[in-house]
Length: 259
Ligand SMILES: Nc1ncnc2c1ncn2[C@@H]1O[C@H](COP(=O)(O)OP(=O)(O)O)[C@@H](O)[C@H]1O
Ligand SMILES: [Mg+2]
Image 1 (cartoon, rainbow, N blue to C red):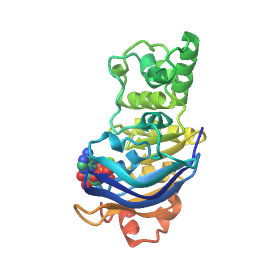
Image 2 (cartoon, protein in one colour):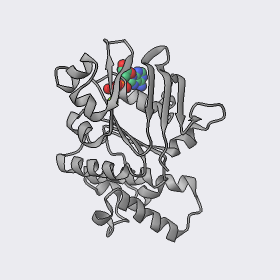
Image 3 (cartoon, rainbow, N blue to C red):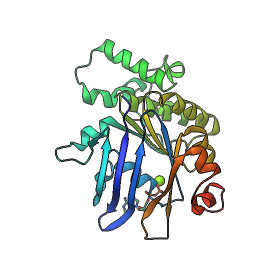
């Protein structure tokens, strides 16, 4: 089930270092939001606060609030492990379990939630998730072969299948195409367009064309200099960010003048 994300004045720290400062942003359900900005401005850091992955890093902590459909992700008693099951993440490099079969890769997260799943339920979930990731036709005859034997683009779709197999509310993607060739990139972009009817999707990308192709809204982050915190500079409809941004720095970035 797709859910909204509301971030209120979030500061993100690595121990004493303030990496991202004062982000407030509202993300609608069933939409794709792109995070863009120069390297080191905190896109990945901020993204990881949306499923509490940031705290896995020693010294990683936040101040401020993140609400998913109104519920505070950082509220007392909230279990970060459960949060990570509801807010899925796909990384820059495809990271399937290489020796595990394609089938077991898809089921890896889901089995943590439901250890007693029947064989027929598991089969149905594998097919549905691989269909959802546009990978079923390519792998249906070799589900018991290792995930590591797939091409890079197929591995990334396998990771997406694994992420959606647990029926998350939100899907976070950190430069999911940066290690892929153009054809695989196109396949993932198409898939993102289909998945947004069911999920709230946030994607970090350094590719301006990709942001304008796949996203409804775009958030531009920037950094004033080394050691300074990254900030959200401008957030709007993607078309507006790319054709008529309000802030000069946004204009400079999207037109390729820096970054
Ligand atoms: N594990 C970490 N420990 C300490 N600082 C980090 C860590 N990861 C990233 N940073 C710092 O946080 C800032 C933002 O980095 P990052 O979120 O990776 O930026 P982006 O994804 O926009 O390139 C940078 O100054 C970076 O050096
Ligand atoms: Mg990054």
